[in-house]
Length: 178
Image 1 (tube, one colour):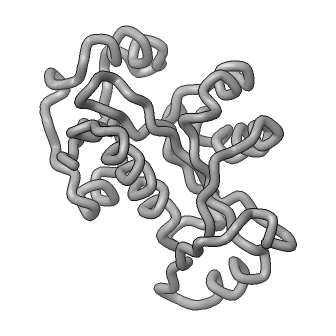
Image 2 (spheres, one colour; image 1 turned 60 degrees about the horizontal axis):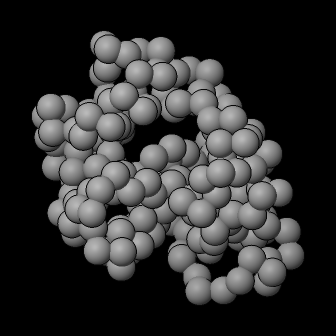
């Protein structure tokens, strides 16, 4: 598996992967134009189709993160993506984490989150926030639950207010110091 920064032509595929979760109200919908505007905050996980098929046949198997280029994959398959959004000098947020159903439980989500942590640390943020329904994944990576009152107001008014569940949010807020 490799993790790259997407290019604009990847947006249609990204929207296709996230569509079922948007329809279920799990992830906020972002238009292609908004995604294009935020393209530099995203990261995408890819794998060679033949490698993905062989790993899917092996129980408990995980994909390995490789340091190679997308150009070296003959038939790349997009596995998932997420974004790292900077809220302040000290706080960033992992957003829109999605892994395609065929690639779940292969370590893709964890690697995307870890990639966000590496960038956050390099940028100098102190903490990474996530709002999620999938607490266990983030706790496994060292995130700890916090009260939603700790979420910056700009997050609530910029994003949460757009959610169909607002103000009755059932997502869990977790933070990790990095």
